[in-house]
Length: 252
Image (cartoon, helix red, strand yellow):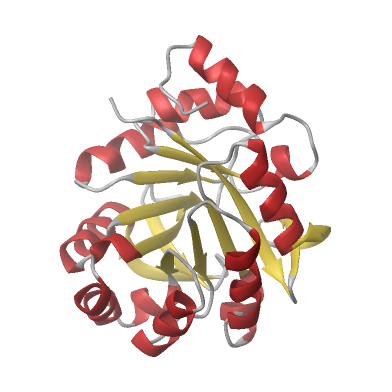
């Protein structure tokens, strides 16, 4: 069985790492490069940097920061936020990113996934899906940090994204993001069964038990978390030791 990956998520605004609940009331938790270097040394398998200001406020993506990150860490990292063209992706990959993640722009223009995958390969493309469970029982895909609802549905959009060239799906439950109340494991299990590419679980980690659950019951290939790492509540090495004790395969 492939090792499950532990991926700290660094939400970036103006070059600083921040974390709030559902992207609001942000708290400054440190310099993006320094925090990334810390996680690389501490045993993270990969990192994800999301420029949360880019899509919501129309800012261009943070190419210079990506160059600094590439110089400062030695593990794979994915970057996203405001990528709306193949040229946007090219700038980030050329700056040193290992993968790019597309979200709002892919919902708006699905051909963007095909274009990046055709030019660089599926392994460079992560499609991030932010979805919210509505009163009608449907997971509606959202854009712009969860503030805009769309007519797309989680599972069908994930399958379409895969068919267009997504190498991984990064799913965030907007109902759970930042709440530290656990992941919706049944939803992740259904999503993992719906696609044939790795699923990264995001949105809701508050404890080792939450992460263990989404990697087992939720069938996720990787768990992404922010708050529990950023505020020093548990170290990545300790998390991995506890996961290994639960017979969950991880790289120590």
